[in-house]
Image 1 (cartoon, helix red, strand yellow):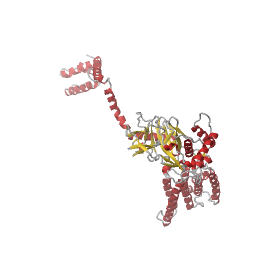
Image 2 (cartoon, rainbow, N blue to C red):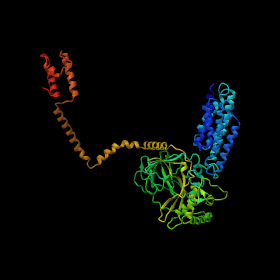
Image 3 (cartoon, helix red, strand yellow):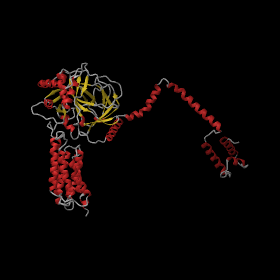
Image 4 (cartoon, one colour):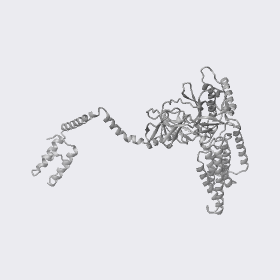
Length: 613
């Protein structure tokens, strides 16, 4: 019996969680144990001898790695190390199949590894769980009796299904609790509205889940000659105990015209009357808010109506989001000012005054430097970018950030807004997406990990300006290899399908009609009434003269057809043209009893077609 073939099914059961772990996150060096064992299971002629000491040795190595990663605040998804441990144990069982390995232990370890990998997966856990269950049932059921109806096989099947159900529920709970990074001390289990920056209330730390597993999923695809760096989502006005609250007052936007099936909405009731500058397709839910480039004056959407609140956040009602949004270039002349744009919580005033004093001494407070330059310099020189910000019970998250001097965009933007307001400068807290990934010329994507927070501040001329205070850092989000060409191809297909569905095909069909309309509308259009007959007459004159010069008054096909008819009539009279004999030769030997009309045709044929008398 071929032992390599016997080990193929156990190797498949162990390989499923290995594949999931590769997709789920960083691959530690110790994962070589799983890969080497799978190679042995498939390639080796004889199985390895299972030894209990293997579990202790591999467990110690992975436990050390896990402890080291837990102590490193910058480590990403350290729980995956535990997944690799169980996957390695399953692979070792597969390599030892038939020589001390146990089916139950192999299935248990592989399902545990699959559950851990699914805690941070990108939506493939359902399909993976089905595949794993089928493989496990085949592995366990094949060892008892003639198939699934054997009593022992049914018992094993029921046990596996029950175990899978429990683990599926547990994996779902783990996924909710660890949607961001391991060791997060922020608030877990937030509703999805608070994660993408489009909610009316945004808690500091809510973006953290966007930067973990699943952060590479595409949220917005764009097509434009000039790709915007920022897409504004929500604009928040009031800060209260770690949360930002948006302005509730809103007004309806005017809709001056349509672009194909989409309605154009303008933020200041002035239509630029130009073609759209770009188009975007939304893959992530924005809960009715339209992500717009900074100060874009108009946009177009297949929607019923649109509102804008006092801060500039745009809500679209009855929108068909699958058909995307168009936006128009230009700069919005927004000089609005709200009472909340300068409001600072009374309890934070001493903290903000102290922070302002430190920024003047530790930052670049030279003549000519604006407050935003000073804040940017202070944050860059005295703070550290970190995705882990501890939460201290009873203390405002902003105070924790300013004292600990580490955080990410939400904290830097919050501190900047409140410090600018404390200096008497109107400022707003903005959330959305920033710094897209350009996949190909004219195309770009914003991923979930591109969720960002920044500042809008009002200068002395009443103009609103964008200010991003978050310093650059090497502590960026996981940069995994991506198929940029596939993203570009997907964007092009989405754009083409959007245009086709929204009426681009009608533009192609209407082009001849538009051409005729332009001709008729032209001042010279009536000259065609003279030009066309003249050109037609010249054509026929030239054609007739050419025929006259060549002695040919009819097309060749007409002469051939008439000659055939005459020859057929002569054949009935007993007169035949011999093979290879010319018409001229037949005329020379024309018999006296021949038809005079046929002879006249042959003479005209000879003269007019060949110019011979």
